[in-house]
Image (cartoon, rainbow, N blue to C red):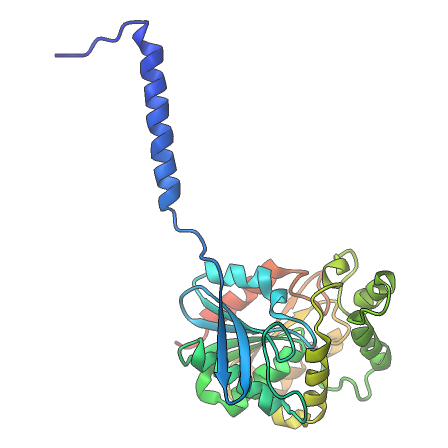
Length: 301
């Protein structure tokens, strides 16, 4: 028997259909998987404790911030890498957040050991792609040399030229700008000038880096870098390298853009990102992520 709907019944029936569709839509929304919230873990060995922001599933990527900066610098990049299907770990350096350990008489070998502990403790033993931003690329390359079994490849994001600071035009001014950018004793207006000089391309928002500095971490990293010869970490061992550069980075003039590839050959890939300087990550997070994912896709499994 067919159902006959009178003109008076039609509005009521239409409302029931709309209500049912709305409930079904809510069920569908509830079943769509959302990006899981990051988890905070502690990687440890001896008297060292390294806080790690961990998220995602898949091949392992470890993100190391630049000197004196924290893991939050990678917020935009980390989220996109998780969406691309990676397990992403962001260790906080000693002296930042909850990361603790001896703070005197350290070298890059000690900081590389911290990263190795993170890969073993929170990353299941790797091997990992390590993305090191600026100074973080020093630690990444040191880790690849000291712990080759844990490292699959290294991304050097905004790595300075080999000759910096010795014989490098403007090195004194740039070094001063880096130091004063994170000096909270200075007014924000003055710090912004230093941030724009050393870190941000014209028209990019330098204000986002007025915060996020960790003086204790900066002191440790500066001393560890000075205590380690460049020749000990520069090569990054034998793993593939991605030299990811900002087109306007004063620490990497265009004349030196291919220096790593000229020295190490096809092991090195070079990608230059427009409208970006030394900060790079907050300036062009989408382009940074795309370059990293594309490069990883070409690596041997």
